[in-house]
Image (cartoon, rainbow, N blue to C red; front, side, top):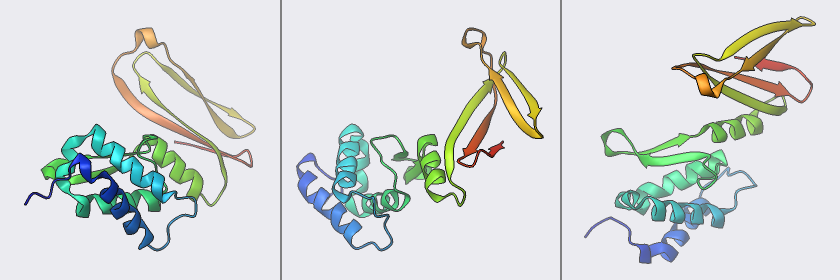
Length: 162
């Protein structure tokens, strides 16, 4: 018998995912278990090749999304077949930003990240002893990717640039 899921298993699969979440301790209070289960049903409809993993392997991914408070349909996490044919879980930039804002000891107001390409300009000014980045991009003259920078602005007005 194949372990692969069929589209007709949606109701049973949703119930299975919700029961896996119900049996998991320390989930964030904001987790909507039904929505998360439906996220995974939609994911399986969009990526039918993932059905071959079966509910026993997919359920821990549902639980991990719940623990990280990430939403598949909002593209906060990617679930895909990775190297060696294993199911892989990778938070996206959106997901990592959401997690940082939720778990930061110092309340975060905003996170901004940009890729730098040949032809872009990036300079640093110091105002009152604090570094400030100036970034300009000419999308029409972009070359190869050079790197990325990130600025985290905290609610108290301080920031981190990396």
